Image (tube, rainbow, N blue to C red; front, side):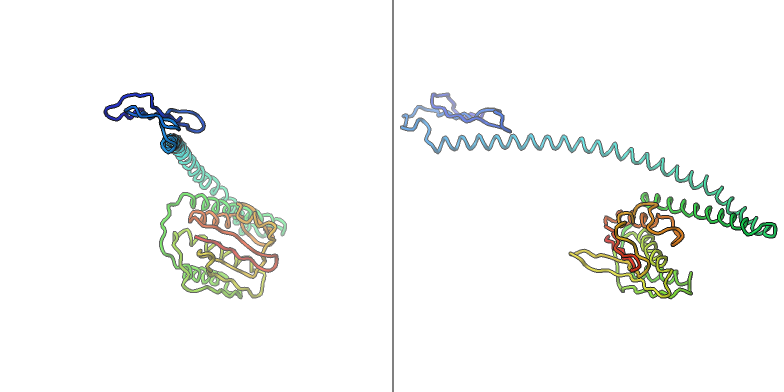
Length: 314
């Protein structure tokens, strides 16, 4: 590209400087004088002029390099957007397939499970006098296994639905929610001696439906894992750490070995046997997915026989 003054004439008085882009020559800056001038001791161009021309060439080289970098970034962004669109379409298709599969699992498996449970119950009621104790025990085990399988299906479907549900964030009174859940637990097992300590005025910006599921799961876990104690304490509250609100549910129940803390939120992973505490191993995975959907974090701390505390942010 040339920039010519008026009137322009090439003379023998010329100074040039190479334009370099990313270490490679891309052009030249050439400056001509329009009229002859006496040659100075240091040449036709003084040092300041030569330095200025060299500086212009450097600036032009950097401008070209920045423009090329930006063009490359734009090409990358365009490519990335295309990839995101393709992946989004693939995920939507996969989600539809998963939804159809979930419906199929729910419909096709529930029916035989209900049949197993129902007929086993009928045999126990109608033919109890014809069965010995071992036969009754076998039927009771069939019923328990079918009920456990049905609960597992419900939990898996709930986990799947949580991932697809649209978010509706608003101010939620978590203290009131925790009190309602604690009252429900006391109504279910009024003989339990459990003290609930709920901090007042704990609020959060969250999806009320999803956060209710998460809080219900955490408080139910605390209730379950304090079940072997004559007296227990369960606490819900919040603290501030580094300009961040951290919510927690704490209990003084069975606790867990921190060596296996990484397995807490993995589906089907249990730190206690079915004989000790019932469950499907889906609950904390569901809680984690809800917290992640709120762009938060969740972690647990505990010790065997000394209780556990689960912390989360939103």
